[in-house]
Length: 104
Image (cartoon, rainbow, N blue to C red; front, side, top):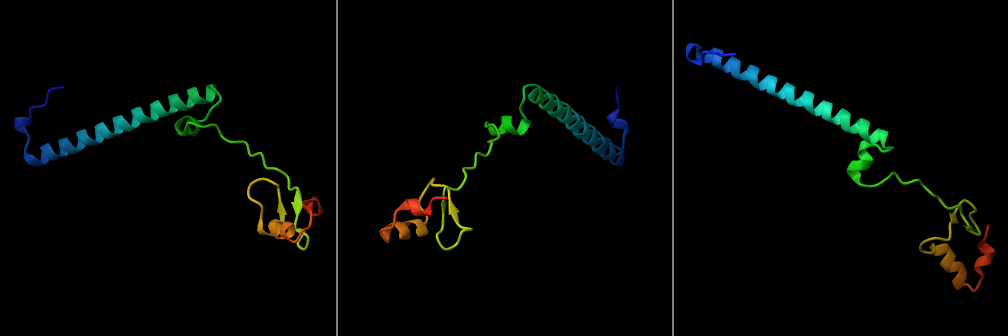
């Protein structure tokens, strides 16, 4: 396709430039969408999501530990026994009482 650019006036040249820019952007968007779809399909075929591949880690399956200890005065407050001891557990121990009293 040959276009005689010398025969076009400024308005026609600017319109042509705008049309070419639009065509380039649409082409790039289309290719990007195709590439993304292909990569997502390949990731799904291998049992992953694209996000997992990009993050570099598998979705963590939450392994929440059940509570092992309960506050002596407020039964809605519990502790699993993992991590730092809560203040109410420390106060109980400092009062000379055994941790077994708090077990569920």
